[in-house]
Amino acid sequence: MPGSLLRALLVFSLLCLGLSATRTACAAMEIEVVGGAANKIAIAMVPFQTAAGQPSPPLTQIVADDLARSGQFSLTDVMGAAQPVEPSQVDYAAWRAKGAEAMVIGQVVALGGGRFEVRFRLLDVVKGTQLAGYSYRITAAQWRATAHRIADVVYEKLTGIPGAFGSRIAYVQKQGKRYELRVADADGQDPRTIVRSLEPLISPMFSPDGTRLAYVSFEDKKPVVYVQSLQQGGRRKVAAFKGSNSAPAWSPDGRQLAVVLTRDGASQIYLINVDGSGLTRLMRGGNIDTEPVFSPDGQTLYFTSDRGGSPQIYRVAKGGGDAKRVSFEGSYNVSPTISPDGRYLAYISRDGGRFRVVLQELASGQTRVLTETTRDEAPSFAPNGQAVLYATVQGGRGVLGTVTLDGKTRARLSESGVDAREPAWGP
Image (cartoon, rainbow, N blue to C red; front, side):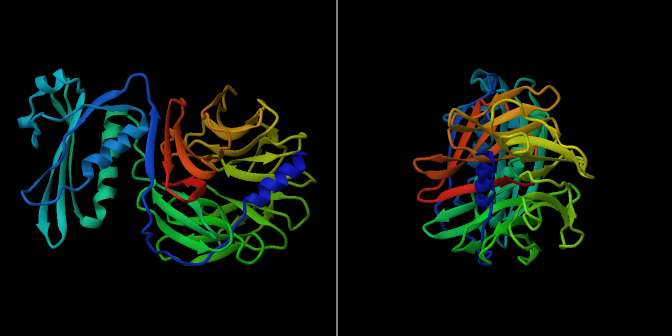
């Protein structure tokens, strides 16, 4: 049973491609947020002022959506209130009466030649002081990136934790018989197709610097590991050995990949340089070892194995040695991912026929179920470690979701008529 399950899991982790890097004109993701922290920060997002006759860019709404999706903020109603641009224009007592603890104000100035200057300030309404003030000179193509940058500043200033709204996600979308490997903003918006194929594509993973994607393609009628540049679009076959080549995972320095190969029989974990040289087998034996992931310091690999009789999470030193079991709750735990600070392990656990995202604190071994869905897969931590991206099934199709580490805030990203799977959260 466990061997066949893991083989099925391994086969599911493979795909194909047709080379392209064009922006899509598909419908945007729909974002649905449920729940939130017990003590949210009340923030007023005052619409940014624009010159008379100029269209209002969607900056304020994008920032507000980002903050709401984090579960740490509640939005104060700004309707009917004065809408200041400078701190000197703010009636702090009036905003405190509306319940605001912080507020964002700003303006957009046209510079000509298709360029704009975006100015914004973050204010502490309780103390009546300014917490941050920045200006950005941008083109019209940079509205979304600028809004995410503003949201990151606000999040960090008010929580003390870096924001992750300006990061990106990768995922595989299936529509009809066509597969596309896409990269999008962290909220699922502004997707760009990296690879297009009539064959499956799976297991995308961002390089640590965010400039490359490793993934598995079936275009050669077998699973092959590729690394592709997101800037130039070129790609390289890194692992195309006899048998199956799957489950790539980047080392923290971006120089190596851990991959799963069947070239010598059973599915085993190997290390290989990104240029395809220096193949080294990490462990030996007849067990099925798969889904490796590096610890943040690069000295340890976590992986899924059936060596104990059922699929569980183990860890082993990068240089090899004895593997130690990490997961003990339940009889089926797969797909490990490690938080950026190395404190937490997230994985998929089966409980009574339900496959859900579980968070485990590595120091104590304590676990917490984060999701309420039943067919979750492919968890991936945000770069700030405050949320987990995963795929699940809703209405018979794959959708993407995020959940905070306390499990209280869940956001669902969905796009009408498509099936989205295999997500990975990048820088």
